[in-house]
Amino acid sequence: MRLFSRVSAPLIAMGALSLSAPAFAQDATVSSNPAAAEMAGQLGKNTITVGLAGAYLPDYEGSNDYQFTPAPAALAYIDGHTITYIGNRISVDLIGDKANRDWDIQAGPIGVVNLDRTAPSQIDDPRVRALGKIGAAVELGGYVGIGKIGVVTSPYDRLSVSLSYRHDVTGVHDSGIWQPSVNYFTPLSTKAAVGLFATAERVGRGYARRYFSITPDQSAASGLPVYNARAGWKDWSVGGLATYSITGNLLKGWKVVGGLTYGRMVNDFGDSPIVAQAGSRGQWLSALGLAYTF
Image 1 (spheres, rainbow, N blue to C red):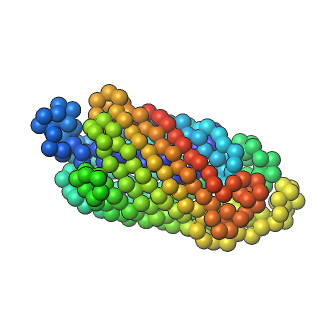
Image 2: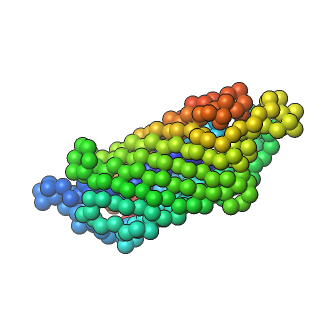
Image 3: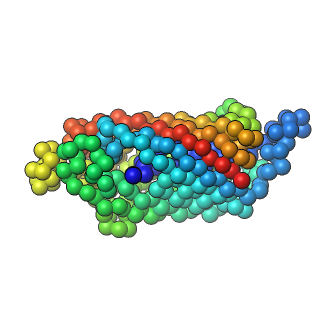
């Protein structure tokens, strides 16, 4: 069973929504709203969120066939620092924040296990299956970002931008990946919050060669034409997500989390026969699940 490998998948924002709720708890209605008052009392406290969702996503990066797969997640907020685990990705914010801070600076390590096409038997298209198995790539690196609270809809919404870089350390594609991202969320109440995000990826020559090029031997086995992909911008994605507490507020108990993303392969990656002939340049990813915060 394959965990999703696209880091722009909707559940990545689950942690952001879980942690962003404290800003709303500073609303002036705290004194007259028991639920808001309870949230205010939890500000700055250490919390852990665990969750499990069902994700519906392409068989491989660029596929037009889809499958369901489980997507586990966990997030720990400890002494102002955030540790986020989503599916095949983990990151740590080493710069602590403060509950009443208008600006949030983030920086820390990031790691991703790229599982794309590691299980050919789970790929519906026989031509792509015939290209053979690709080993799991471990991509390690870091990220930096900055967020501003109170920018558009209320004093409690949040807009942030970040840039990450990771490099394969296992020799599977032996190249780097740059990923800029923009995220926005706004709380709707002590129980609900919604968000929007956009991201893109620029990859190196090794990544293009491993996942999107087709050698003469692979062409003979699959029937797809020989193709040499070059480094560059690989794709862009936009999406939305929402969370709703079903047992209290967003900082405690059970919540429902869901998201939807549309992504599009571009340049040599969209033109690769793996995408243009066997798959699709446009792809959807969705997820729906439950999380618990304690």
